[in-house]
Amino acid sequence: MEKTLDLIEEHYPGAGCIQPNGESWGTTFALAKARLRGIPSTFYYTMFPPEAGLRGRARIRASLRMSLCLVPYRKLIFCSRALGKAYGSLGCISGRRMAFVPNGVDLERFRPVHDPEERDRLRKELDLPGSGRIILYVGGFMPRKGCDLLVEAWSKIEARHPDAFLVCVGTQGMRDTFRDASMRSELEDFQTTVTPLLEKLVSGSRIIMAGEVSNVEAYYRAADLFVFPSRREGLPNAVLEAMASGLPCLLAPFHGFPEDGGEFGFTDTEFRKIPHDIGLWGKGISDALDNGEQAAGLGRKAREWMVRTQGWSQTVARLAAVYRKLME
Image (cartoon, rainbow, N blue to C red):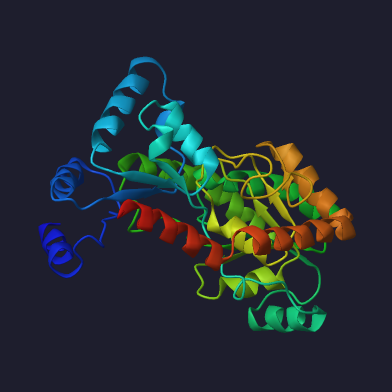
């Protein structure tokens, strides 16, 4: 950090700021030095605070710790207004220190499929079923993402829709970045209970585990429906990508879910919201498959919303405005 401060003072005097990628007491002390040297700092929040669920003394302690950690920061950026509201409710951040910059999406990379021929070609290239309907989930296969809901609901869906396939794209199992002991323990418990059920379903059903991929945009264009039953998020890129790709989206009201008319648009216009309930997810997916034209309308509206509000150009302009204001 000291070298970074020296570099800014030497080459960008009055035109530099610092945005660390994590919080710690060490970072707090380093940024306090930066502020004394006239170098502003900011932090970009992208995940709903687990502290928001605390009560009593535990909540007070968490709020005090966060307040002290954030003292050196001039501005705190949030990827959604719901996220800013959640952190504000902890009593540690005033509204004047907040800025809101939603995640942007590459509208050229994530676009609707041109025609059925392109979809057929993509399915062949991805080794996906050429016929039938594909329900797509993108994200880590873990309890926070609500993947257990999909697995539990699938037996009801596949019985009613024998032409449906569930394709899961994303990390399966442990990852090097899972350093938190509680997260690793939670994931181990999840694998112990859900993985055997998943393996049983995969052996004789239509669930396809694609794993991590570098061409996720092709999976969006090859799919018919996007599902996201997560429990806690910030502003998930997977949802923005699916909406930009023109897919009808079924979303669970996770902690951190944008307000109606916010970053995702409006319920039942740009997306459909389904509570965290196995039966309701089974019914919601089946209903979307039964009403294809209505679902397609959601996808078209979702694409239009992303084009109007959250392309890269809008996000870059918003971030640039925040940084310019910081350095005035």
